[in-house]
Image (cartoon, rainbow, N blue to C red; front, side):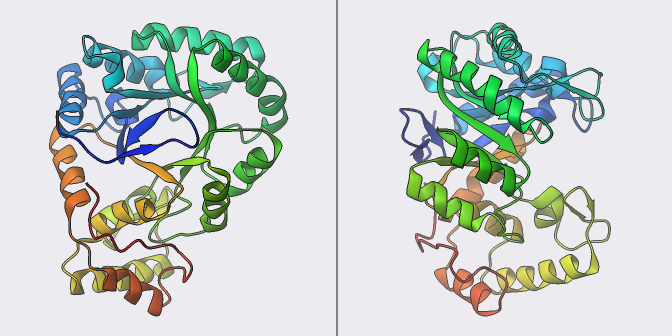
Length: 321
């Protein structure tokens, strides 16, 4: 196994690789993925030094967890970190279209029991309350106390919330004591709406698992026809902004998708960037991006052109090991 930089998740004893695997695509999110290919993808992660694997019961009705459990069987438990979720679960074959929700105290315990069985493990490293958009109070009053109990029992090491929007995460951060948050698409090369929250988390010692760093694809594909931004066709304004960012990236011989992966890692609150794929070869691309030497002048020019928040922290380290 190779080794990537390891970062602490908040103030916990959990440490994760700077890139993690989002397991939703392994559960037939976009297309049917053969079991052997899913297992190969997970094993390639381990070989490359990726130790964080993020799943959820809603991904394929538990299929993502099942495949992680299969691929990680026989691997020493301290060699990988599992993040999974409670609250949302699948009631259809394709999880993305039909979901049901249960943020009750007993529902959390049932969910964790099922996840432990599917993952074939005795504890969960990171447990997130999953997309409680319309269930804020129940998540706070029932799910949160339940996961605190699980943490006290040693079944969970770090607790948090995973959502697509900043505002409800701010509320959760102010209302309860969480170790981390998974935030999707809100702190990226195109969208720094989550910067103030990231700064808040860094000050409080709360870790961020940064998801959706390609903003639904446009930061991976570039401003091509049909490029997606937040799950929809990108607007002319977003296409133009992306084109300007890509032009500057090209000036410094840095692929757009490399800069997009690396930018969230510049913020001290970021514990890991979680990327979803079902392709073993894509893992090699992620590792290559971590080692790509990005000149500090690129970030400076992006700020100078108004394409990046002026107060976005940049370390200037050049590469992530």
